[in-house]
Picture 1 (tube, rainbow, N blue to C red):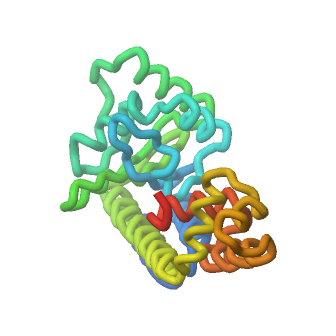
Picture 2: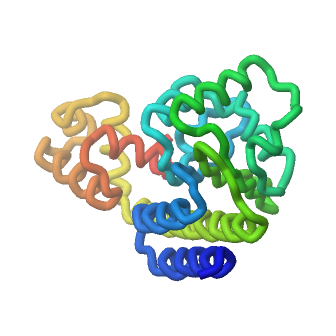
Length: 246
């Protein structure tokens, strides 16, 4: 089989598999297969945060080396990463070594690239994604060596766009489900959640609202089911995120 045929097959296999994916993990598995065909060892999909934000909540899918992901997030490298800087400046996909060759890099930027090599990411291929509304994202692949033909670059570019779109669809569906659940939270449940966020015990909430402690427990359990929360802390966090309480 020719390299061109293998490239086309890898692209169409990914599109077919991911179109039937039911969640992020199935997209991850399909992307992993495609990445291997193109000689890529690891990959990630993330939104790009604003200058005053961290990257943690923007990660949509992550298959980076575990130690590198932890270090990258802990050190907040996103704001000095030259790959991210290049992504913000252009819509064109690029190989790291080609795009950054001959470019003056700050000490912090050099540190990011040098430390990435400790985890086998000597080079990589990144696809910038810019929406009309200003949202910026990146699909990025890391490898010890990147040797991609023009056809392979094009195929990996299409795969990246499709993977990101699938994840955005799942994210939108999840947001819609949570918003629908928020509508179902009753005024009494909202009151109870509000007092929970103030650090009140079930007994104290019952005294404040003039209801029994057992009723408070029932209201918390009911709201937790609606918001798919497993404990009080998660219930409060979800309620704040959805605007149920402020």
